[in-house]
Amino acid sequence: MILEKINHVNDIKKLTSVELELLAEEIREFLIHKISITGGHLASNLGVVELTMALHLAFNLPKDKLVWDVGHQSYTHKILTGRKAGFDELRKYGGLSGFPKRTESACDCFDTGHSSTSISAGLGLVQASQILEKDNYVVSIIGDGALTGGMAYEALNNAARLNRNFIIVLNDNNMSISENVGAISQYLNNIRTADAYTDLKTGVYDTLSKIPIYGEKVVGQIRKTKNGIKQLVIPGMLFENMGITYLGPVDGHNIEKMVKALGEAKKLNQAVIVHIKTNKGQGYSPAERHPARFHGAEPFEIETGLPTCKRAKANYSDIFSTVMRKLGDRDKKVVAITAAMPDGTGLKRFKNMFPERFFDVGIAEEHAVTFAAGLAAEGLKPIFAVYSSFLQRAYDQILHDVCIQNLHVIFAIDRSGLVGSDGETHQGLFDISYLSSIPNMNIIAPKNKWELSDMLKFAVDFDGPIAIRYPRGEAYDGLRNYRAPIAYGRSEVIFDESDIALVAVGSMVKTANEVREDLKEISYNCSLVNARFVKPIDEEAILELVKDHKLIVTLEENVKNGGFGEKVLQLMSECGIQTRVLIIAIPDEYVEHGNVEILKKEVGIDRESIVKKIIAAYVNL
Ligand SMILES: Cc1ncc(C[n+]2csc(CCOP(=O)(O)OP(=O)(O)O)c2C)c(N)n1
Ligand SMILES: CC(=O)[C@@H](O)[C@H](O)COP(=O)(O)O
Ligand SMILES: [Mg+2]
Image 1 (cartoon, protein in one colour):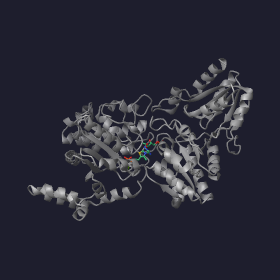
Image 2 (cartoon, rainbow, N blue to C red; image 1 turned 60 degrees about the vertical axis):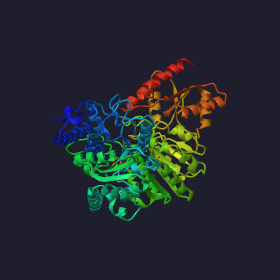
Image 3 (cartoon, rainbow, N blue to C red; image 1 turned 135 degrees about the horizontal axis):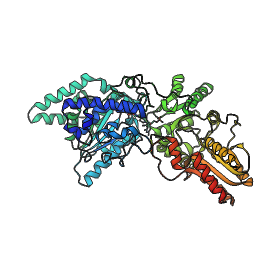
Image 4 (cartoon, rainbow, N blue to C red; image 1 turned 90 degrees about the horizontal axis):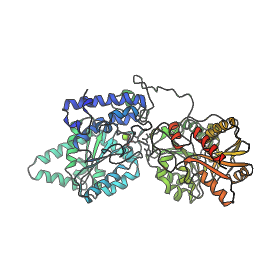
């Protein structure tokens, strides 16, 4: 096994070219085997095995810096930097992260998780090296999907004026999670498929370069020419015209060719894009055939590619998908938007049924929000389905373009709360806080699958900005009989007792009900209130609760700062009420990756911890 020889960074440099080919095969087998057990981002990682090897051969880590965009494709990099043994615990609590982490290795120079940040971060590293007079290379590796994100262009706009080497590797597999979208994707596709064009370019350059003394100059001259012959011989004109040298496209499964291209790129004192063509899922036919399904794979059977655990119940995204279909049927003004997540959010069905009312804008959450605002300004009813953590980057667009004008944009916020194995960057723990500080915004959260459906209908009939937050995973199907119509700003009393009032938001209603049952067994009486509205909070109901309850407990899967509990506390203080409020929420810290149940325990929002906290608070009243 060649893989056994790879224990430290740069071990790869000791291998012969035959061994390198074997190593690529072994890494693929290793990844397929490990991820079939743990789950993880398989298809993207299979696609970059040779590219990562080429980068490790061409550069000296950790002195040189590799910045992985999104970072979901960094598994081979982890293997080559001595972290092979960690793959049994990949994305598990306390185990190896699925993304680059500076705390995990000196070879991880920048943490990522969200898309399109690598060129900005890389440029920062380059400028820092210059100021600190360091002598190292910086390489940002960005996918064609990540290149649909606006931040990448903001960075390219700046990188173009560099007079120092900065290599941007464009890992082009012609896929985002789903099919990539937009003009840039089309442009790259044209380059990918225009082999004759590439040969012409290579041929012309090679011939010209071979002419003694003047050849190199002529090539340089062609690069500087704004049109004419350059249009004919240089793919990647878009980048060249911006002032960024373009090299490629290069076969991303040929190590030798990539090392050569990277060597050329290293010679330039400016920003240079090396366009690498890869195949998402390379070497594992189920992933090659279904790259979207194997983008973020659950554990699967290697022979068939089928998931090992069949899902018995629908998750919230499935419910959303079904309701969206009905809403689309019922109301022609309903339009749906996704920022490159049609599968994850459950919008694929809507896309198939109403293609003219479906918009995938690419990984462009900021644009998605302002685009939705434009649609709403003309009277349509846009529903932007987005993961909680990805909506974070559209804060100003929500405030400036939607809420100031009080436009009727519906935010269907999936993955609110703890998401689990993706960790810090993806936990949806801030949306209540960041949204509720914005005037005109309304925030609701369903307790179960039926309420998600009711709330979506309510939101479509509403007028104004409204966000519905719901968690990742299985949709709760308990408390079915509690289905009072949704009324603006009103909560729902589920159990009316005395002593302790549990006021829970969305996913925490289920937990609160379990806590209520546990406490009942030891003779504590608890009322259970489903908050429904986080903004505006149901002040009337809360002021009613303080009349016959000694302790109010608020429960939410959001950070405490700026959360629901703090709003209740503020109301109490404004009304001069002394009743004790116990806030069950996420503490002021980032929550790492791992199984959601373990994470809940760690942050103290699991059933058992809550019971203990309530008893402690109650006996100390
Ligand atoms: C801001 C943000 N939005 C959405 C995502 C979800 N996401 C992760 S990877 C990905 C597709 C990236 O495509 P590409 O860069 O081409 O990489 P590939 O998976 O094809 O290797 C998306 C949409 C994200 N990580 N960050
Ligand atoms: C890397 C990334 O951002 C996505 O692939 C994300 O991991 C998807 O998460 P879900 O599995 O919750 O759809
Ligand atoms: Mg891609």
